[in-house]
Length: 407
Image (cartoon, rainbow, N blue to C red; front, side):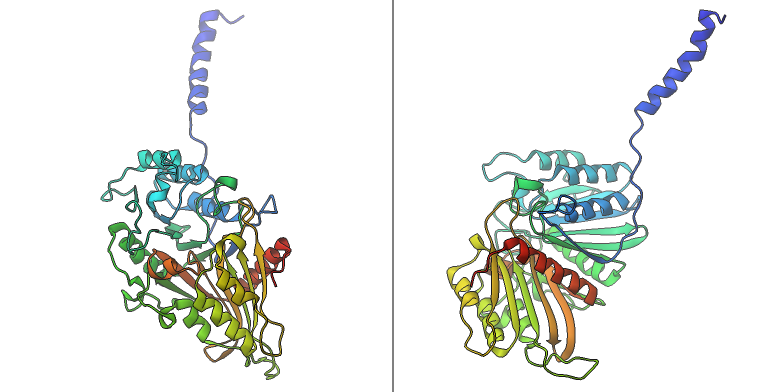
């Protein structure tokens, strides 16, 4: 029989080792190589209702040690994203966040505990490798509008690759707001495009330093330069009429009647224009869509019933004067758990004289006057057939969920 004293000498080191193992931090998630593509929230699908935030957290969890994550976000109320950023910091990733003042306090005036925790964890010293900040109360960081409305993240290295993550969603969970998980939202991951990353990186610096201008759109000669299949547009944009409305200008590049079939040379296909828009108040855009319908384009629009003006809605619902079907439009009710928060335009057809193009414009930019003239925003153009088709499928999914034709 082993004497009791000897048994203690054997057992105590083992217990100490077990105690040490108990307090070891949980292992980091497996690193996932980033891939360029789109994801979409589907509030009617338990698996995909959080697709956007899950993709963001996957990128955060895969960021390389020593790299930097930079986030510009309108509203930060998601504690799961906060915890993912804190975990990234613990393994050597730097984190920098610019948010609108609304992230600091709720509309009631109460402090947002998620932001308070984030501020305590990372500090506010912008000379440090990690920090967080908000724009001033009631003011964008750059423009003279009220909102720093951006929703993007930059990763200096994920599995050795630079990544731009551009979303339409804020950092909310479920019914916490009209704009996060549980709503119809989308996000683009662009991996390995150094030119696009560098463009966003410079813009992030302007937000961080609050370099004031009412014409961010034209601040740099290459501010809306093409970077491969991608082209960013930064706001606010100076101007007073439709000639400086970026969406109207995009739509002016569309030829409604000359969508050539490359394989046969036939010239009879209509150009198709689809808009999914959370907030729609710019009359010039609605009137342009109606005129395109009259010119022969096939135009479809889905919008949120509580976020559109009566005159814009009337333009979208009006019977066309030509010989085709008229604009098809649907709306979603103001259901906080299942409403529309995406903001995108998808075009398949003749664009700037090129037939059979498939393009998408997406980001934080609503079709409102503040989004154009005052707020800090990014709109990203994507020139890719597969990504366009993914947005088209998402458009169909939303219209089926809406189930309400407004005209």
